[in-house]
Image 1 (cartoon, rainbow, N blue to C red):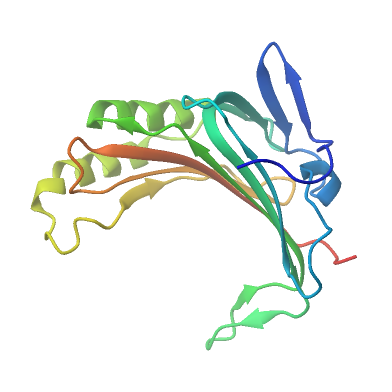
Image 2: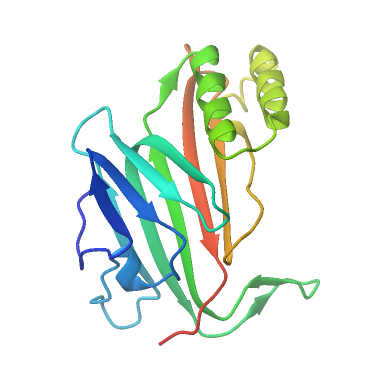
Length: 199
């Protein structure tokens, strides 16, 4: 996955570590999102992939003062323009009006229960989050053999989140398929910003 678009102003590099400053207001300029898209397209993407199989060290600075570093294979931002608020049957807003920015970070998958738990626990520690979801992950790993074979190909996992700050919801998640042998864990970081006005 190669990047198309302007050079992102929120990205810097020092001593071989790619750093994203997520404390800045979300914008297409900050995240290098290409706005030269076909008429009618609501979603614009800024994507940064790794050429090396082992990913690259990437650090994220968060509005609450936390930071986290992972070995990332892909860093993907998107901007979705939504002209009107959308609600579900109960009246709850499911998609607010405005420009919505999202972030997904994929990391290098790891094999084996110990590696999966250790990697997730390390990210929780970096973000100063409680490790209660580690116990939930360990329970799901322990019961992997008992999952119905029909459902065993579906991913199961856990997630956590840092306290919302600067309009950003951010947190890690990890998941695996119970029928993998050995179990292969996919750690992700996910972010979503409060909507900003559509230009």
